[in-house]
Length: 77
Image (cartoon, rainbow, N blue to C red):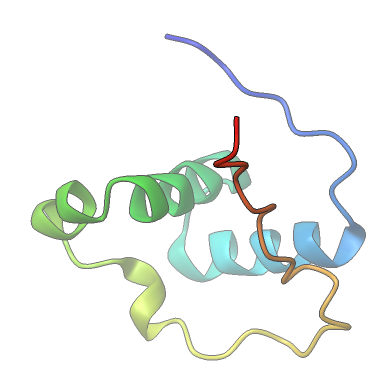
């Protein structure tokens, strides 16, 4: 199985991930994996079990830097 390393994540994003992981009793790696599965395979993730993040409550306020939109795909190429 392949692995993924993410560089340059801001401290706020890592803190939010740490909080979610602790709330769900997961490691940060497991929580990140679940977030990716929920985002990329919503039918598979919801069929297996409801997302544990739905009852986690609000996350601490942030500066908003962790809520960046992904770059728009280039459809001209």
